[in-house]
Image (cartoon, rainbow, N blue to C red; front, side, top):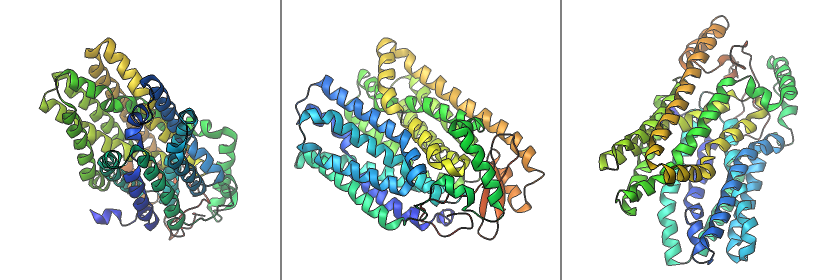
Length: 473
């Protein structure tokens, strides 16, 4: 299995070490509501409002972080947002209650920016064809950190105080900024992606990149998305399924309690989710790295729906275990593959914005999941799980349909032009527009819109921590 990760750049492994430590310390989101209603003495409605504002801030940060990165550099944005979030979290226990309305959402916003900037940074560090493995590494260490962080946070809260949770979380975020600054050196930070695509790549790809860049600037991100209908369908499917997926944290524990299962049982079931992901995420990324990405994502979304369908038989042990295993398998298939697919499809000048769009829709369930699911469960509890299963299955079906459509279009446009050395890989990917290779460095071109003539695109002249590549900046 380790051979499948040989091409993941050293900077990603080093960055992942920082992600792990930061994830271990990122336990305040688990205890923030208890902190507000307990040590802070706020009422449940006020605590709910502040927590909700924090969730909105986190989603907004995910949606905007990549836009800042495309303009100012992903590494620079990651460092700035990490420092801002770390300082806000560390100082939060010292602030009066009135200030929490602004400071907590600000901290969550900055953490959302960190998340999307981190994804964009990985996307520009890693060459195409290795991104699934690279994102799997980052996701796996993050999940491992969160798994350790929750019980550690409980020990700190009970053994010391809740205030130390925020101090530790803030310190971990500041250390992550220092570590990232050390292990991911800046390159090309003074140049914007638009400038870089005009002439940074040089050579044969310069002309193509200039044309692509000019078209991109005229059409903007929406024009780029319209030229990539498969990405639009994928983003819509992820938005819908994230609302469904996060029912496991809101209405699912209510469902278990209504069927006589204690909180401890819910904790064990959630722990099963983490265990399955930690064991299978990396092997799955290697085993499926040459499979058509949209097909893998579609199957994963269908498995999420199948997980909730398992609850139609009740809350027995077999049903809830089957539900969590299916949900975990679906998450393994769709999350890593989807984020890598969006990175592969992004034009060179808008990698950060594409990553922000994916990051934003992939956490929208944090804000939308609980109120929508809770309202439906209160009004018609018997309808929630069938609807979740049907909607997730439909979203998966839409992505599978786009996979089949992209595969047909891709084979038609690639068959006459793909070089023998990459034709086999392009055919294996089906709906991935792998169409060319540049020189000995192996820089791979990416096709544009569905059905249009594929063309090579340059890598952005961004801040990367990877080795020099012919078109890398």
